[in-house]
Image 1: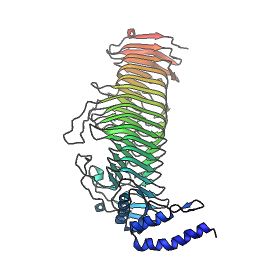
Image 2: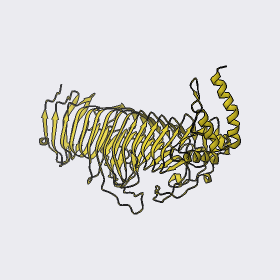
Image 3: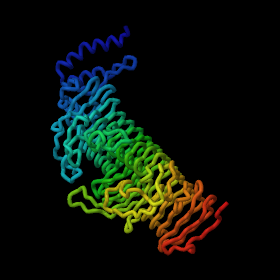
Image 4: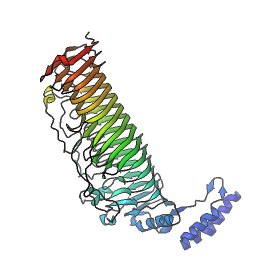
Length: 563
């Protein structure tokens, strides 16, 4: 026998019984100290690890292990930090409190099970205001407040057992049913490789946290999973957002799969004086019973310098990609690129500036909002709703500004009649914002209203069934540039592109796919300064039609190809 292995076995026979008999932190550290440098062909006796079994955990999935897990966390924290280790078992628990410099490691094959009794998740006081402005924690399985250097890692599973809760259905949902993870005011956070499933409410939420890495996780918490059936066909929804960031900064989310019963990845702001800032989301797959990747709806503070790239979003009941300010938020410098969409029941792209003005802090003042400097690039999608398409809408008194849509290729279900293009869309400035807000849109592709400085460059729009609505409608837009648009159109379509009260418009290098009736319709006495450059109109019966005081004199035309 190798002499190094023999030494390890002797140490194990001498030290481990002493450890188990004493069960003290001192004996654990003594054992680790004696053996930490003993190298036997790569085997190192671990140090800085607190095994929950040593603190009395049963791991049988029946006995509550809350106290044992918490004791291991407390000992680890008191010793200056390390790893709390869950392995080879199912550990039933109520709320546990993660503390600074502690890593919660759930090993492959191990499971942390949430208790099915709501009383095991006490609501306690907090220095941070909750959704309603009250200074309480609400309910969750794992909680941390003002902690630093904390992690949840491992290839194990955390099961919130949301299916075992029969309510209560309160508002907000997590005041009655627990989230799985809730961190507030924490810094230097890592969530890696873990699976979070079956939550009672939001799966995970991070409020006022900084310097976070969320990588390689799986979220599987989707009640009523059949996307082709009504949303609540089997049971009442639990508001199971996949991942919520609330006023967080310096966050990296990557390589994760989110399958959720409510919004997938959602950025929010509860405080007018805080921000979601410096955030990257990349290489994620998202499917949800609501919206896929979303900024909003709670939007009180600032959202800036956020990039979302290399993602797939599919089977969403509402919107795929959405950005909104409706509670006073200032939003700028947001980029979404290299994203694939499939089977979207709401809007593929939804951008909205509204005026709901809901406060989430007591006596908070609503700040002056703006939504500007937005980039969507390299977006492809199919199976997109025939009702909602895409919409970019501001307000008459608050225009969305500086939007670029580049290299967009979207295929819609289609099948709507020309009469739908005559619908008057109400402002609904205080309505709940999502792609369903306006009902069926008058354009099958993009409906754009109250926007200044917007570019559509290399955009392709098509449909599966003939759709008689315009591909693009722009109403009250200023400084609009459409270049290299290719869109399907029908002989029954009033116009492929419809401009209403728009000015400083350039349409260039664009064409209709198939035979169409009219390429461009211009209406409204505010319409002016429309430039028509190098467009290919083969198959079109008419270049323009004018109405509502608009005349051909406002159009400058160069280089049109008609044959």
